[in-house]
Amino acid sequence: MDNSNSANAPTPALFNTIEIRDLRIRNRIVISPMQQYRAERDGMPNNWHLSHLTKLAVGGAGLVFTEALATEESGRATHSDLGLWNDAQAEALRPIAEEIARQGAVPGAQLIHAGRKASVQKPWDGYQSLGAADAARGEEPWQVVGPSAIPANPGWQTPKAMSIDEIRRALDAFGVAARRAARAGFQVLNIHGAHGYLIHSFLSPISNHREDEYGVDLGGRMRFALEVAEAVRAEWPANLPIFYRLSCIDDLEGGWTLEDTIILARELGARGIDVIDCSSRGLGPRGTLATATQGEGFQVPFAARVRAETGIRTMAVGLIRQAAFANAVVEEESADFVAIGREALFNPHWPLHAALELGHDRRYDAWPDSYGWWLARRARTAPAVR
Image (cartoon, rainbow, N blue to C red; front, side, top):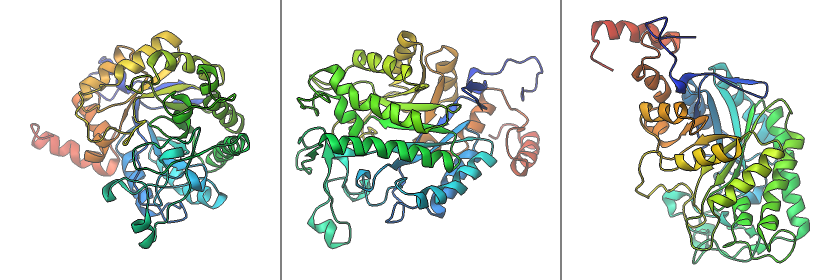
């Protein structure tokens, strides 16, 4: 629907609907998965998660992802992460999925195994491997795993190199978690294969020194990522889409490259993955580059190249702040979706404000009636106020 003042005004690209498999999404704005570190000790959500995600759905995004949900208890990054390793967690997540949908957004869930970056402190506690001091206050460390016995960072716990049986159990856990997510009412899945977590650590030659079928060369290092895609696609409804988050580059000498990503993306597309979520880096301390100084949309070129060279839909991420910039990303076909994270924390109504700025909804029609009725009158009495 055209919500602008002029019936002939074109819809900004950012607010075009999109159909993917049997799903119709109201616009191209996605709320990225964002860890809240507020879960109960058994990986269960609480009122914080319901309030946080409902607020973001009210804000007007087309698709709202939960934070990453651990597929196994040992796959959490911290003691305060949400999980999807049992049915009780799925049932507790159901009201959240329902409320996101009730607000007009599509509910999405992200699946993760933190691998060698598990068993760490919350960011504001230091984001280091859990140790004796943490155990003394009730946050005991646990054994982390990875493709090889190489720590993620100096001083961090050395992971146990996974056996073939352990790899198979991890694959099964991804599949079962996907089935639980569908039963909980989520309509999109995002597989976290980036930022140094388990899948990414198999992909990168820096962290994967295996000499069996899950290592040695690019084909071997991609095997686990591709088998995760197969396991999830087999358990996820055929009419619903799957996104796959990748670190498109390691940005480290001898690491994973954009050329590797393009090869992997083609193989993922052949296995039923619908959208490549194009992030980068993170094999070291922080996956989100939260402390780095970067320009707006610094990762958009990755999404553009993957889309151009593979024909697979992509999602752009990376400090996207301005409505005009986000619109240009979609308009210029650099990506099919634009994901915002910290900007949504700063302004939960960012999508609705973007519609105002782009002239798409000058009458506040897209806002909930309880807000829009009042704001439209406010605009008429004080038109310069936004």
